[in-house]
Image 1 (cartoon, one colour):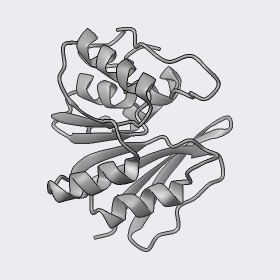
Image 2: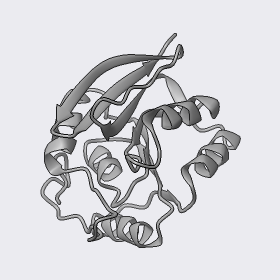
Image 3: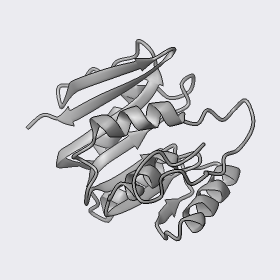
Image 4: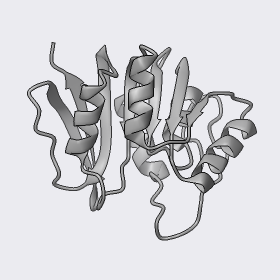
Length: 180
């Protein structure tokens, strides 16, 4: 895996091997950022279920102002640290469950312009992720919630609008905006 664009483009990312880890592929990340082309600059980003931190680091490479990485797996947290160090970045890593991280961030008054979420497909639904993000009021006024999920899953919320969906085999990426 590599950083797909921006000032760190082409740099290799450390990932964890194994069947329990399903990193967002370079092709999917590149497609996501092609859609977000004008949204990344100066954005405040959170990468929930960060894994290697690839989505957040790609956003930083493309001009995001800051990124918070949420990951509860010890090996994955070590990979995020290693990847950030390899490009000389210092960002916040919250090594806790995503619900706890969202609660802590709300207490700090944090809002995010881009919220990336790639939950484990069989354990946490896109609906659960969206409800948690909304419950803790983390989406900025013009922010976007981008969820990678098993194809066919949808979020049903009167507080979010589905803007677009892209399908990559059994994976889909859905882009949501808050209703104003």
